[in-house]
Length: 77
Image 1 (cartoon, rainbow, N blue to C red):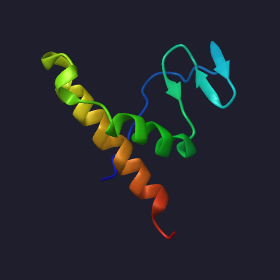
Image 2: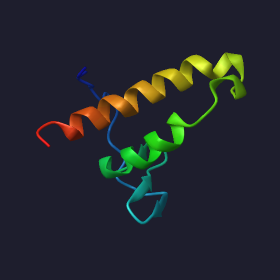
Image 3: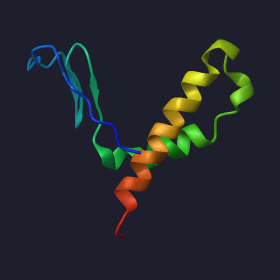
């Protein structure tokens, strides 16, 4: 699944927090795609029942997003 995103706001180039290749620019978290495998492993081991019921749908969407990115990265391998 691919979606096109259109940024209406002027991009912010100022980096607020940076640790290795991880960046937070004050609005967005920037995580290199090679981290997806590790993050997916952690998320895959989470007991969904331990998550507040109100947050479960967000968790499911985030998990699906990570797996879509991981599948995209693995194409052609």
